[in-house]
Length: 348
Image (cartoon, rainbow, N blue to C red; front, side, top):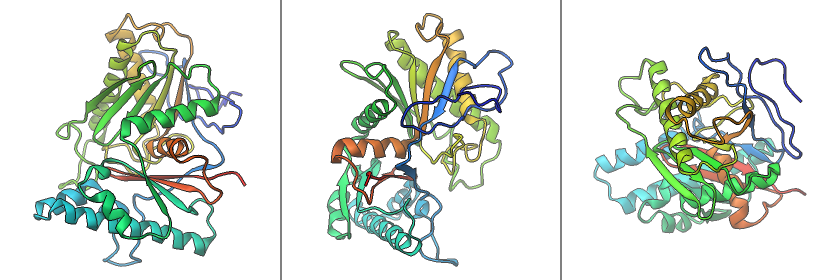
């Protein structure tokens, strides 16, 4: 079915998924973006969990958000204070267990099905911290904890699960663009898969959280992030022009049902309702003007785009690593520059 409330984009109806429009701004003055069929990936047993600004110390000046406790800014501050990595690992592992135990207690109070879980799947750059894996198990949490494989493998496992769910015929030839806080990673599916990573310049795109003084001129930063994502996408396309035109685009932050980002380290993203459209326009422009030989992407009348958060992609990957989710659910927690989480529940 088509949602006629919006002038661009489409709503697709794929069996087993709930889809909402996320490309909803104006038509570009320089090109049409009607051919991009952008859909927000949703399913009933997969829910985002808002971690970023969750405070677990109660009200008052001692409250600290999960971002302040576990984000990259905290790690770097500890290092500047001369704390050794093994001690940092123990500190952050303890913080993580405290956060997760808090979520379980809140679930018991509120009967919230979106936060109930009996095992946790941890992914992200925090696992590269010396001693973190051992420190995590030493804190003896009241639930099972499993550690994700390295990020490239996790991205691919999640993408494979997504494609199997939406029953697309393109499962062997898709492009995954995983926008991280530190880099944009792309995977061209094939035999073998082709992986690339384009680093974020923190001089051009500084952290939106923790900046002193606070950042201004968000529009300029949005333009720079759009250019980064479009360049990473088109560079990967030029390496495999036999791709079927299916794009999986994952973001390093929570997304609402229409694809609007929540809290994020990219300046100008939070609450930006036109961001996805800007990114699609940037990719379209580079396909048409910077890489004129890109086929079949250039001439294809319809290109499918599936939009989700990185945490949701990791939650799908958890199923590939751990097996089907239990009824109480598997909470996937992604810890890099900022925290992200999603829960995948089994069917009773």
